[in-house]
Amino acid sequence: MAHKPQTQKRQSGVRHRDGAVQNPDASIAAVSQGRIGNGALVGGLALLTLLVVFLDVRAGNDLRVVPLLVVVPALASVYCSLRQTIWVAVWITTIVVGFRAGADGTFWDFVFGIGFAVLACALGVAACAARIRHATEMARLRSAAVTLQRQILRPLPVVTDHVFAYGLYEPIEEDRFVGGDIYEVVESPHGTRVIIGDVQGKGLAAIGAGFAAIAAFREAAIREPTLTGVVQALEDAVVRHNEFSVQTGEAERFVTALVLGFDESGRVEAVNCGHLPPRLLHDGRTSAVTLHRTSVPLGLAGLSREARGAESFDFPPDATLLVVTDGVTEARDATGAFYPLDERVAAWAGHGPRELLDALHVDLEEFSGGVRRDDVAALALRRAPAAHR
Image (tube, rainbow, N blue to C red; front, side):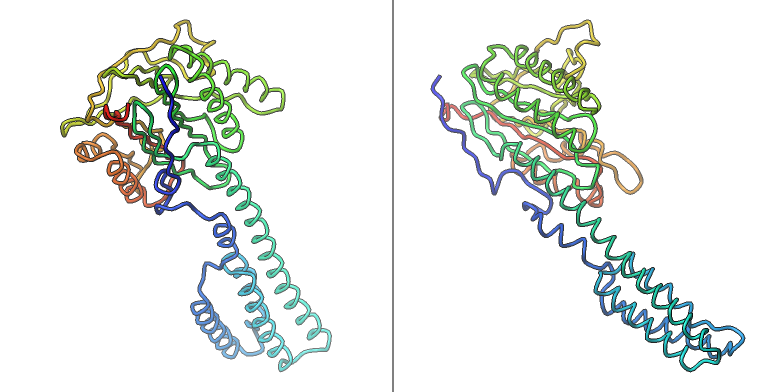
């Protein structure tokens, strides 16, 4: 079979949060921004100052309340930008010095009082600078990890002789929660092979295991004549990666995966390695595809006595096959309820692949309130018309 270049559309394919590729520089700059606006900060600080001064005047010399204002820069260091914290520290220092200068007491009372106020305000500014520096370093690490994920994964949509593959991919960018969802579409002499999977665990180590699986799939999908041969190559790659991980002190990981094979027939071949079953949308109806030979995840074949096997199911020309990772099915709302994927997909049974993923993306954001704890990956596949073969 003659091969043609795969069509890739980087801008309109893989959708990220808010429908656009995020700018790493913007996420890094955001950590230095204060959580309190300048107007609200000035107003709140003015009211607090007036209240403390009023209490100090009412209490008289028996109880000095104004020196307690030195705790304000410490609070500001948690919620404000560095510039805002410096401004708060200068304001509080000025107020405390002014009241100390007009208060009764010895010279050393004045010196120690002013010294304590200056020290407390300086520590608040230093704490804010340290917080922002740490947050900036973490933001750089998150952005580097997510950029690495996006470079490993192929931009979608991809058009082959057998399928149109559209995708939704949203990596999570929260410190240790960086995940390891993977997908790939490869056109080969044996048909089009597709994988979607999820690496156990989070962090850069999970991305490394995902890269090992993706690299093995890209090679085996072209080399191996059978889909079970492709999966065996993936198993070997994950096992080798785990052996290397143990040598370097990392934990072993497994990968849940669904591997699909498409050819000129009207059926899809599948090997399920502990992954979620696909959903088939056709004639205004949706149903979960029943796979009877689900096996253990990649990397765990040594624990099972049963060899992995392939099975097939019908895939009509105008049907859409939806495959997702558990970042979709395990998304939660404010009450802790899981996302009802089958219920939602049933309402979108008449949608095309693009519209289906758009609806899923918007609905997931609304359902979870924008709060996620795992990567979200989904592929919507449709058989290519005869004219494209």
